[in-house]
Amino acid sequence: MAAHIRRRLRKGATTTAVAAAAVAALAASQAPAATLADGPAGGGDPKAAGEDTASTEDDGAATGNSPYYTDLPPLVTPNKPGASSNLPATGSAEAGIPASVLAAYKQAEQTVRTTDPACRLPWQLLAAIGKVESGQARGGRVDANGTASPPILGPALNGQGFALIKDTDGGAYDGDAVHDRAVGPMQFIPSTWASWGQDANSDGRKDPNNIFDAALAAGRYLCANDRDLAIAADLDKAVLSYNRSNEYLRTVRSWFSYYQRGTHEIPDGTGTLPTTPSTPSPNPGPSTSPGPSATPGPKPSPDKPGGKPSPGPSKPGDGSTSPTPKPPKPPTSEPTPAETFGSLENAGTGPLRATAGQAFDERVTVLARNALGAPLGKVPVTFTVTGNTGTLFAVGKKTVTVRTGANGTATAPELRAGEKAGEFTVTAVAGTGRPRTLTYAATVTARQADAIARTDEKALVAAPGEKFADAVTVKATYKDAAAAGVAVTATMVKDPLGLFDNDKGPYFKDAAGKPVRTLTTLTTDAAGVLRLPEIFADGTEGTFKLRLTTEGGASVVIELTVRAPEATAPEETAPEETAREETAREETAPEGTVPEEAAPKETATPEA
Image (cartoon, rainbow, N blue to C red; front, side):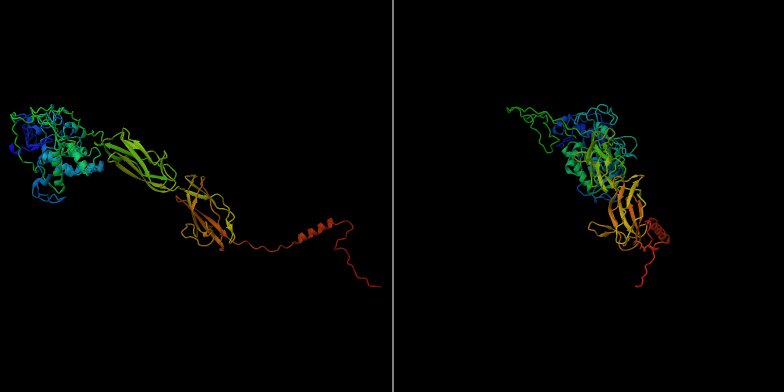
């Protein structure tokens, strides 16, 4: 059994002395054939070890600041980053990680990347903590489902050399109904597991002794408080939240760097465990010489790495008075995972499309989840419209904030499309410090018509070089209703399909008075009606076509005729008309008047 005693120290250990109770408990809980240790062994008072005595409070740490392995990585660097599983261990088998354990770490990284990508959790950090906490599940001694066999249990946290944590689970996880013990390959205490436990292998159980469940729980715990683990300060805070000890942080950091340089997969059960035995420190006898009291003074605050302990009581007989100790600050506990914002997801929002000036059928809806993956209420979500289409929320603003309801969802107000066609985005942002953001693409299409027709049937005719006297008026409709604000294109064409533009015949005039045969700036009015500008004819006679098309594909073709006026001949008087005129003159002549035609002609009389 002595050969399997693992060297582990409690939080904040600063000397090599280890209490006998800790050694006995660790030997019992970490050996391959683990059994429960019920109390101190080896005799002596573990508290007499001075600075090596553990805190009597768990200080909010995930492990209750339970003991851990302090062995450091070997000096030989592993093969290379991303080394193949077929490569042998280089320099030391320490670089190898049991297959199931390695798979659990990588699976946890992928899961957290999906639900909390801003955390940037590296699986190598989980591997470093797993190495320090349990020697990678005691070298990968897990069954086919990834469950440690036998279970991994830390010493009873009974205040005898360790923190004092009374039972919180009725022995359900740790088999101890008096005191809590750290449980499983990631060494969660039952009260922490009750909040952060996960079912990563979908077997319906949250088992702290299952490496898949434990690795995911550790990943979510490390990501709490909006941490970004790619930032060194956040990573340090995360590790210290796991076990509030600077030595623990240094040890985890060493293994983290080691695994980042390279590792490889090895068969389950063949992993290397720390083998350096530790020897219980003898209990110091009563002090016979003047000096500091054997009672340890206050230890450095875990919140101030590198801080110095406060002065202890003064030496006997020096005439000084011991200062009144200040009450310790209450530990800052981590928020419960049920209260910790974890992720923001799309809650089924469909495509965002609308016609200019109309309301969008879809409304942007998001779902907030806590660190456990459950819906989280009362989370403020800010929705923002970005783009130049003129689109606004129904409240007339581009930015609104909505809190999630009890089901974790928040729905933005209705969107109203602007008059300009084009694309824009809607963003949803939630969380402080390291917010989560969702972006939705949206499109505003131009107003449409599915039919367009003339409002009258007059023939449109003009003489060469003249203006068409009658204006062209059309009406556009959409689903039999007037289509207001619809863009219309007018083009002089040679064929009804508009495949060929016409370069002769009727034309419009632009602002400078120059002929143009295509207009693209036309829009129907509120009644869907469009009156075209004046149309002019050039010197070419014939029948021409004007094609009008709308957004939406509706079209109409109108004929325009250019021809010269017909020439007219002098009028001849008909015989019947002449007879009537003569009769009328006779009837109106005065009595005694002889018609001109009936009067005798004068004859010349010869001179006598």
